[in-house]
Image (spheres, rainbow, N blue to C red):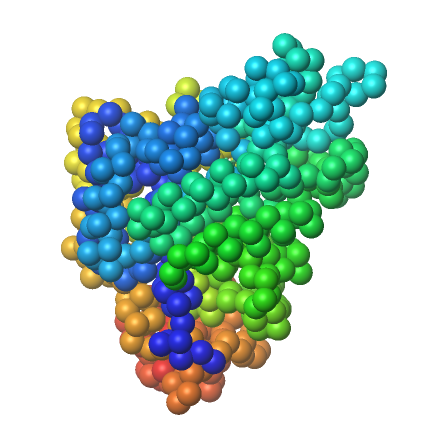
Length: 531
Ligand code: GLC
């Protein structure tokens, strides 16, 4: 149990992720921007969240939509200026919101002056800022390492005859974190933004920073099946989770700790036992939160989720690490589409009531679904480079925010073509319509965040799962001193009588009414009760 007053903002609060291209277009070019976000911050604050995380807004040729940075200390003109950014931070802070940026340390854009300088040849003083290898003895790529976006992780620089490493696009060369000058320069970028008032960072692919120095082939993953992305066909024992990466993260943390009350959450796709060590120890802390993506990766099944929540909560306690939960982000299909309409509120309730910091992806609060994007409008390189793996495309979850019923849903001025198509159902699923409907998904979301404020047990309380006798129902309690809240989630389509578990006063039901104490849990119902 942790009293709310003892928690940091990133423990008690909800993080709201904004994909800047898709939130609000103020300039009228079909792409979202900083002035647009600033104008919408009162809405974000009204949701009852604590912080906004902005996907990358830095200077970039946008080949991976900003995850290819050409200047770590400036804003891309598409999104605005440093003055626009300062105004955004000021408005966020005025509204009581923290601001988190997306820090992309593993690779830069090939347009970055550092890489352009490195390309001048083996004698360039920036050559060693990237990872270069000679061809294999018989010619060709140095080893079998693969890019996450398909194809080899190596591209030949014809001028020098050497290959450079890129775990993503050839236009995203990996920085060489072994080089102390690279680390110093990258840490300076963190300080630059913290001095401008930034409260925290989401750190892109932080578990990939270092590679094994022997550059050996990675073994084949015998569990790989056709249809899965090609990158998963290898076991990444030399490119992921290396001991040096942990060292660099400890150094990175020390930079954050030069400033008051800042935080970082690391993007890490690893099993729990390898994930939690990324939080470090009290003496040698690393990331404040190692992203827990397991609710996304796991089947939507009450028993499996209960088993996972029990194990993860226990492991976090043992490691003295604060838990966190994620259902969606800009790389994953919309959770409403994954779990289905009937289970949407069950999933939302789970996310906001488990012990740990929730991260919410923009639009999930109004129940946005994946938007089918026709081939001629597809723009995501991960999809375009892997046409045989349709699920790899990330456009469907990146479409414009649905604000109102006007022609471009209020995202862009009417007559402009948004960079990705709008959802066909935007006239029904949007903020304006849902504000006016007390039974809407938006009001349900706000009801959940209100419960978190009114019941500190939901924020700092202990977690314990409850036996319900029904494999399709997951129930748990959150307890803090005298306060007890029970959450009961029906993953199935049967009415389930849970007896005593449902004995308390109903605080919120996903079905919009207030069942009597003890009333059975209805199909697909999520209910939060006073314990
Ligand atoms: C992370 C980002 C993803 C990006 C990749 C390369 O996984 O979330 O969007 O494409 O890193 O930077």
